[in-house]
Amino acid sequence: MDKINGRRRAYAILALCAATALTVHAQTFTTLFTFDTRDGLTLDAGLVQGISGTLYGTNVSGGANGYGTFFEITPAGALTTLHGFDGGSPSSGAVLQAANGDFYGTGFGGRGTCSGGCGTVFKITPSGALTTLYSFDLTDGADPNALIQAANADFYGTTIGGGANTNARCPEGCGTVFKIAPAGTLTTLYSFCSQSDCTDGLYPETGLVQAANGDLYGTTGFGGIGTCANGCGTIFKITPTGTLTTLYSFDRTDGGNPYAGLVQAANGDFYGTTLDGGANNSGTVFEITADGVLTTLYSFCAQIGCPDGASPYAGLIQATDGNLYGTTVSGGSNQGGTIFKVTPAGKLHTLYSFCHLGDSTCTDGASPYAGLVQATNGDFYGTTEYGGADTSQTAVCWTSGAKGCGTVFRLSVGLGPFVKTLPTSGAVGAAVQILGSDLAGTTSVTFNGAAASFTVNPTGAAIATNVPVGATSGTIQVVTPSGTLSSNLRFRVP
Image (cartoon, rainbow, N blue to C red; front, side):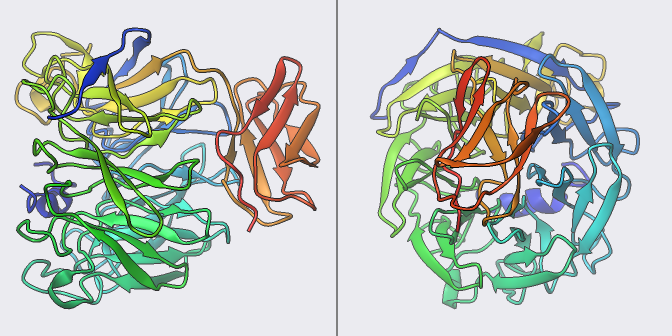
């Protein structure tokens, strides 16, 4: 148990097939980088693609000061440590980059009344200069998760603990939903366990997603009306002003303990994972409509020995082929976790199985706790918490027998290039960055058909623009000398 993630792991400790899975071989897996304690370790957070064209991420421990790092890594695997945290670690939620180029994230520690601090919201520049925007003080939350930037330009997030409500199950608070302005003014929108017996949920373990209707959707790892001890978790909707509706309570047979967040797919429904429960008590993939009708699409460990994976800790992404991609922390043919693809109808394909931690060599990594990101070159990038080619630091990595301190990897399945936006929504006039792999020589940018003026940055990896007059919600298209690139998501104009 590491000293920084102790409270998060303490919350998580409360928690403790009839489908066909096909193995697909038409892909290329590459280990790009192996961490040791100098570079940082405990890669719980996923990666994000930046305006520079490189990827950014955090470790929650290790590094020069022992409290984790903020790093940049090129698609080819060259890593640079930009910041070593000191006195408080970044949380296990990924940072996000705003259109102004700065990154925003959350961390443990800070000045609050919790032992060691209740957590912070911070801003960090691409060169690594950090500013603490807010320190939680238990009454307004503790241990914040990842942020999202909504269409109104404010950030929204959740805290695992703290808030107005306490009881025997959550003596330091049951968690919150909050809003914070870019300048650092925080508003607590909701405190969980506001209802009798915590039927509204407790301990949200991950962040939120803003849906096309403008509301925010998320999960709690515990609570609800399910039959698990402390509840099996919930799915909720909350308005930007703080009105919460519980859409669904898990009951173990349909999944339990949804530690990951949701993704809204192109069909308007939400998709997610549960860590436990399901037909084989090894986690599930589910679909839920905006009004709360849930369908269990897949139950992991459907085969003897769990070659299809078990225990998906992270959420899903919808890739440009329309399918959903994710990871499991265990199972697979080597029992070190998997990368999988699942169709919206629930047919699962195991794309890669990571090595077992007990293997004498574990160069590809093991236990991917974080989810995937699809970069604009079409490839997927992710991290593993353990394993890798460098075994010199084995004694100080977190798991007994672990060979290496985690990796960054790339998986190519043959998908083509596209563009994505920072942020994914905005009113007319709002600043937007359009990310791509080779945007030099761009001749046209349109927002659902409305032409926009633009400037291509010197690296050719991004375009600076503003939402043009006449823009409506829809696809962004960028015309380059090599062809027309479309955005992976519909850009939403509120």
